[in-house]
Image 1 (cartoon, rainbow, N blue to C red):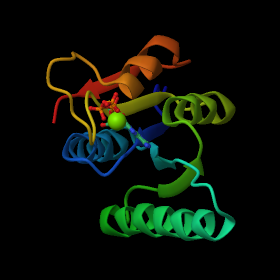
Image 2 (cartoon, helix red, strand yellow):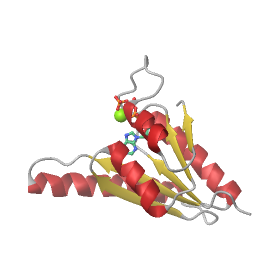
Image 3 (cartoon, rainbow, N blue to C red):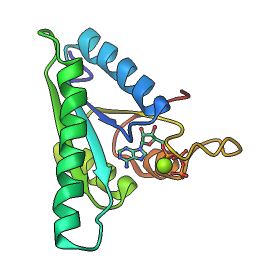
Image 4 (cartoon, protein in one colour):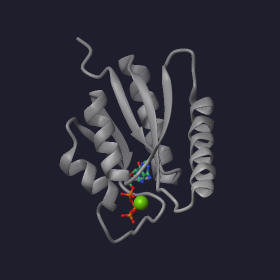
Length: 135
Ligand SMILES: Nc1ncnc2c1ncn2[C@@H]1O[C@H](COP(=O)(O)OP(=O)(O)OP(=O)(O)O)[C@@H](O)[C@H]1O
Ligand SMILES: [Mg+2]
């Protein structure tokens, strides 16, 4: 029985999320699971700006996918707009991921908190196990 068939790795392009992604890739290889990289960007106000920011987010996450792609692991990349924690949870529920792998901290990296706000929200409400890694 394969316990873990699909892994969701949310990334904000910070160093901790990047090391979590490397760990997620090793797990995917070990479990013969697929890996989905999810970056959530926040919607800017103007339509033009929205298009530009959305394209930049898609390019960035696609760049990571290209960098990580190996013949032995199926890697997908997604850019979603909205609140990071809500989007991560929506994706995990809607697509039935078996595991989420993420950093304890991200870009803002407030050292005095055990978990950043996105990590805390996801750990509290995720429908599946969550692995968190310090950078
Ligand atoms: N916009 C995002 N898109 C996808 N994943 C994210 C996003 N923001 C954070 N994450 C994931 O959550 C992990 C923890 O980041 P989090 O935002 O909770 O910490 P922080 O930035 O240090 O704190 P805070 O944002 O509360 O100031 C990251 O390593 C990454 O895996
Ligand atoms: Mg953050």
